[in-house]
Length: 89
Image 1 (cartoon, rainbow, N blue to C red):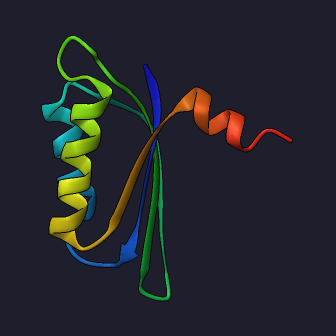
Image 2: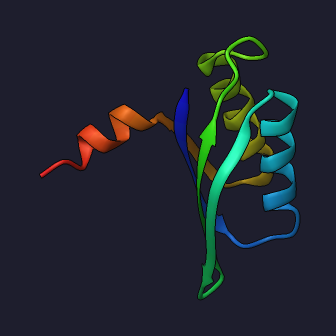
């Protein structure tokens, strides 16, 4: 399943490393990634492919939310089809 992962918060060390580690532990692949820092605000968007045989969507979501709380950043994961539908004009 394709998903979009968004991360937003105050810049700090290890954000990319910790988020990508959680995804790897859940068997997800990062297909594309974009990240920037603007005025001390960290922003990252990833297109990922989840492997439901390793971890289902809810498990990945729970792990990412917990990681976001640990890092004091907001992490949101959305199914790609839902993401595309939300932004369809």
